[in-house]
Image 1 (tube, rainbow, N blue to C red):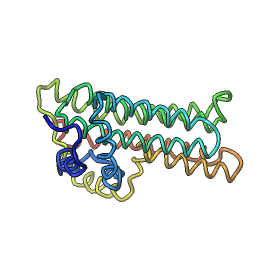
Image 2 (cartoon, rainbow, N blue to C red; image 1 turned 180 degrees about the horizontal axis):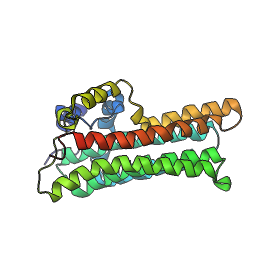
Image 3 (cartoon, helix red, strand yellow; image 1 turned 180 degrees about the vertical axis):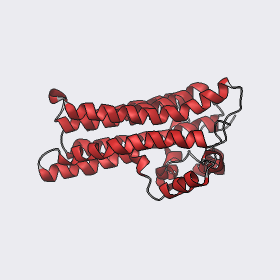
Image 4 (cartoon, rainbow, N blue to C red; image 1 turned 90 degrees about the horizontal axis):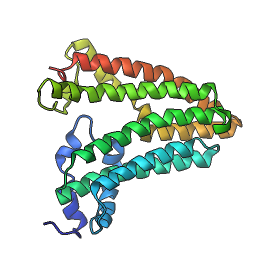
Length: 260
């Protein structure tokens, strides 16, 4: 049994292996930049308690929904609060895995909750933006409908990825390797396009961290303009981006080695 009061150095060695940062679709840039520097301190606080890794993962879902809910409120402070809540979500998202790795308590439920947390948060944010652009819950209209349409496209992108694992499981194939080589489209032209998109990652606009930062920037424009011009412009930009991302992601999956 490992100690419930490890040092920060011990935690980093045992819970942040190099493979964590080598995954193709794994570590978010905030994790590499600062979250993984902070998360061991949170993990160390939780380890002596009876709080499970799954419970921490469940808390990330609550924080994500809270961030989206706060975003529907008017004003720049509400948008700033949404950014803070999503940052806390990302911090706990790093910590839950560290708790599981330190205690050697891995569960299918934890993986399921982790996916659910990200999917629900990223789907809720465009809807929240739509409510905000309409002026709040008492004036829901066309902008909320637009936000909901974007949310469907965002969820479709997530579903496209999830169905890769479903299809492989039903075909009796092993888990797909999470590497750039496997994920890259086989045709040369598509491969080059994918490589170019790494320099203009517009598809990341729907990841919770980026979405919250974009929402805050839009709220700042709203504050200066005295209306909802910034939020509405963001929604109008997000619709074609979501459509292109959903279509492009599907083509990339079909053209890659993930289903072979």
